[in-house]
Length: 116
Image (cartoon, rainbow, N blue to C red; front, side, top):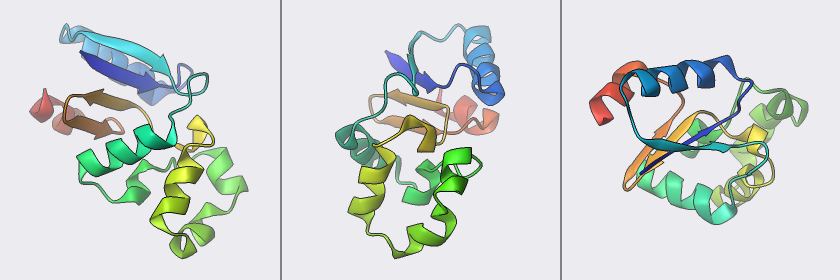
């Protein structure tokens, strides 16, 4: 079973969900704001994804900008960044599609099509 992690008010998330529904994908939905990812989850997703850790940050988000993370992240250890991501779901890039070894961060229709 896939887990679709999103912020329900996000237009990109809504589009991704419509895309999943149009392909009759079976998934459960998780609201990233009310059910914040844990440190263990974020660390596991990061390791499984093969992506740079920076890809997990919602760089266009208000919280990212208000914390001046563009300037702070380069000086932070991987451990500190993972712990920071686990403090607030709004720092995490969304949507995420998680299942087995699959970890997709952000909605890219081509990547999602290739993966599914």
